[in-house]
Length: 512
Image (tube, rainbow, N blue to C red):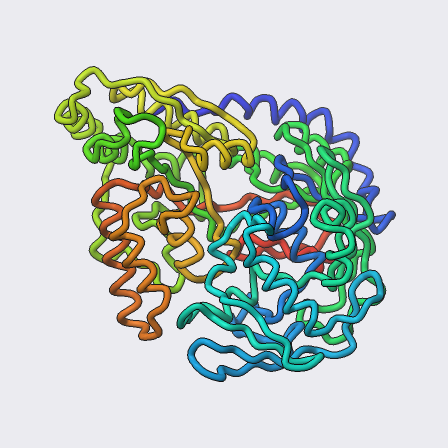
């Protein structure tokens, strides 16, 4: 068993004891101010949705911007949002009728020009979109008239509607051209239920209800007047702020702390599985060094056998987590673990494979991570138990991502929530298409995925994914750990419901 980090429990109890007298008065201050304050540990490097891929950025994006299509989180059905109707002209051309009477938060009208500009802009190299997988299935967009557009695809793409309902928000063309990306990141504008009033680097984002928000939106009529996202890196500080009324909502609360918070007055605790998967990724392509141990398939397999994923689920992740065997979230369309090689916890086999690979005494390496430090420390413990002397390099996400893209990371603990896109292409394709995030660069895997993503036959698509996922697992390019449950803790004055796509919909929340 690896050494788990449980030292925080007594600290939590002490903080709770200090906080109890302060929260026993009944109401939290922010209900009176009609301001929902939520806190998290990470800050997107740029508030523009296409220019960050941090979950905190995704949350803000869904408050401020809108997409053409809405996927109902309860039924999974696609519903009209900024587009009122759509039809396939042919297998690679989608025509959409746009909603009239919608305005951006600066009062300018929403038209076809905005859709065409947004999609054509994000397809240019100058846009420097962070997650290109989200848009590269498009070839471009054309204006038919002020309220009709056509989206051209590079090839058949069965997940097109799913992407148009998720990571493809629409920007105001005239305003963006005027202020540029830098100006847009400081004073963004969308058509969503909330408008940004302040972006404070290192502190967070302030928003208020958009009074001109269009009636009849599938998102509903937002109830809470103001929303504030606050960056609080330290977990104990976030928890203390919640218990003393400084914030109303926090998440990613460690299992032991969540259990203790259930006894705190005026705090509600909710746990739910999410689409996020934690995984280890290896420098199989040998970009860090020509002789890196991570190029050796047996080394990668040894690391897979060295990690007790079930113990991590039980002792760290907690209820709602599931061990994953494929490089995707198991419930996504196209994802399967049927016939995919599995790695049970077997440290003796791990040591044997290391010896066969030429490392009987193990080796030294760096393990990069950016969140859930205790999870990463558990991995370090398992690796050291089989002779791999791992040194934890804990960075901010953007720094870790750029280091990996520059070929400087031998081993990383990564997580991915697929932008809440319910399709395997939003996970597997991001990490295995010989793009900047691909650390294995296997052309056979890439070819299988490209064929899978453009195959409209469901059975054939699943078989292609099965082949690709089996190859990824067999060669040890990526070790899936487990799905992430999320422990939410929030003011009992707040009515909040969690969804499996890890997207807190604050526009549906309200005060009790």
